[in-house]
Amino acid sequence: MTTKLTHHHLTAEKVNDEHGPAIMLTQQEGIDESQTVLVHPWQLRAVCEQFGIIASDPQAAKTIATLQRRMKGLHGRIEALADWMARHSDHRHADLSYETTQLHALLDLAGEWCADFDSEQEAPAVESDSTPVECTSTPAAQASLL
Image 1 (tube, one colour):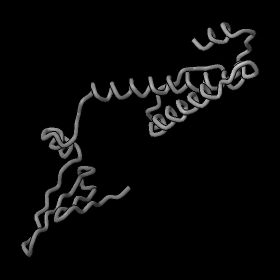
Image 2: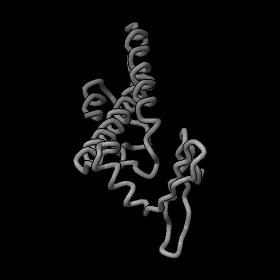
Image 3: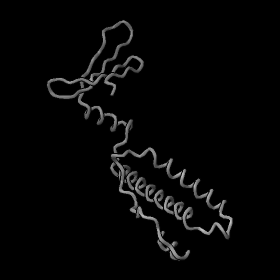
Image 4: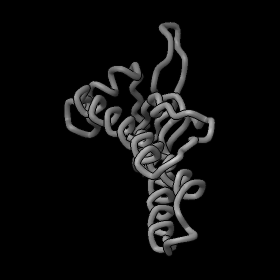
């Protein structure tokens, strides 16, 4: 992790003082002496929240977690359907190439949308049996997906 950031004439550096972690902000402009202020990270965060630079909305965080969980659930369902289509659909009697192509495209999209979720923030995915589904008829197979 980088502990120093320089943006135009402002330098921000993460330091430790006798009170714990701090952020040292130094403004150097022109030939005058630089101005420095030492702030606690929570103080800097509070200032940024107060002026709308960053958001501090617990409801937004809850909504994001809910959407992540739902997207992972959708991904799991699409994956299970793609697996079922590959193993149990009636390819001998029907041309399902279009449906299979669309299903794999959906699976790719769902995988891409879920790829950036932090592993630490992962919500439990929809549980599915890792054993293959044994189906004797299409209605029974469809019921197992619901």
